[in-house]
Structure formats: C-alpha cells, structure tokens
Image (tube, rainbow, N blue to C red; front, side, top):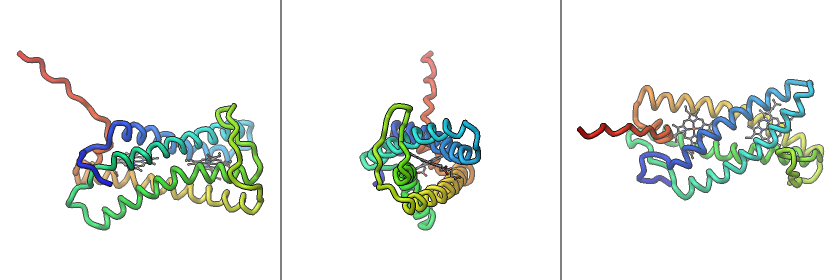
Length: 186
Ligand code: HEM
Ligand code: HEM
C-alpha cells in the first residue's frame, strides 16, 4: 500500500534505523560466536538469542505499522524492473527479519536446547526434538544469513544510487527529519 505522504512516519523511521543497527550487529555476533571456542562463545550466544527474539518482536510491530501506514510512493519516473526490485527486496527483508529468528528458535527447539533470553525468560520449544530437523534448520539459518547480508549490501548500494546519482528524494523518505530554526523576526 502506498500513501500520499512523502516520508515514512516517525515510528517507522525510528524502527528502521534501530533495527538496521540490531540486524547488522546480529550478523557479526553470529559469525563471531561460531568462530570462537573461548568461554566468550556462551556470552555471545546469550546476546544472539536475546537480541534475535527482540528483532522478531520489533519486526512484527514494524509489519503492523507498514500495513497501517503504508509507504511513500516511489518516484514516477523509476523503471518497472527497478520498481519490482524495490518491492521484492522489501518483501525479502520482512521475510528475513521474521524468518531468521524463527529459524534460530526452531533449530534450538529441535536440538532440545533450553531457550533462555535476557537471562530470565524461558521460551517454550516451537518444534519437536529431531536431529534431522535441527540439521535442516541450522543449514537454512546459516545460508540465509549470507542472503541477508547480500541483500543489505544491495539495499545500501541502491539507496546510494538514489541519493547520489538520481537525487530523487527516495533517501529522504527514511532520513531523520531535520528541522531548521526559523529566523527571528526583525
Ligand atoms: C535476525 C535474526 C538473526 C540473525 C541475522 C542471525 C544470524 C546468525 C549468523 C550470521 C550465525 C552464524 C552462522 C555461521 O556462520 O555458522 C548464527 C548462528 C546461530 N544462531 Fe542466529 N541469527 C538470528 C536469530 C537467532 C535466534 C533468535 C536464535 C535463537 C533463539 C539464533 C540462534 C543461533 C545459534 C544457536 C547459532 C549458532 C549455531 C552454531 O553454533 O553453529 N539466531 N545466526
Ligand atoms: C540491516 C539493515 C537494513 C534493513 C533490514 C533495512 C530494511 C528496509 C526495509 C524493509 C525498507 C522498506 C520500508 C519499511 O517497510 O520499513 C527500507 C527502506 C529504506 N532503507 Fe533500509 N534497511 C537496512 C539498512 C539501511 C541502511 C544502512 C540505509 C542507508 C544507507 C537504509 C536506507 C533506507 C532508505 C532510504 C529506505 C527508504 C526507501 C526504500 O523504501 O527503499 N537502510 N529498509
């Protein structure tokens, strides 16, 4: 759904930037934790699980806001393939922001690992215990992390193209609002 507004609403913009930081941190924490055998591993897994479930909750709120408020229309002179690319990448982002945490949660459930987040909250398993299922979900979580990273790189490249080459206001739809002070009346 598109709206006549020229910018995303303030809560949508806040969530976008907050989640961009969280998702990028998650990708690096994920790779960092599987590359270490030191005791840091357990701390990193704890942070990874808690932040991951946090991302799931924020993504659901963001999806609800997107359905309620829609998105500003893309510039009219954008070619059809570019429009299609923009829409597909947005669907893919929402699928990954919701799917990755669910895969992580599902993979731990299938391995019968306890899922404790923020040090106190025990989450129930969402899937039955099964070694086969665990391997399948582990692989999906692993490969989709690369897809997520590649999509973010493409997204940033596309945004830079809009901002620096086309200068068509697409970047401004998500940029923080900067209010200029009104000049004092003389
Ligand atoms: C947006 C959310 C998430 C992202 C982007 C993400 C990303 C990643 C990445 C990049 C890795 C490293 C993959 C590798 O190189 O082997 C990883 C591993 C892992 N993730 Fe996630 N993850 C997310 C959510 C979650 C959640 C919610 C859980 C659990 C509740 C979880 C559990 C795990 C576990 C247990 C591993 C380590 C598997 C192993 O030791 O081999 N992840 N994740
Ligand atoms: C993990 C990183 C990121 C994710 C998951 C992400 C996701 C998204 C999604 C789903 C949208 C569509 C609007 C919405 O429903 O909220 C969007 C729009 C936007 N993003 Fe990102 N983003 C990320 C990082 C960035 C970065 C680093 C920049 C700046 C260079 C950026 C700039 C924008 C802009 C300007 C828009 C509005 C134009 C459009 O809809 O394409 N994003 N982003």
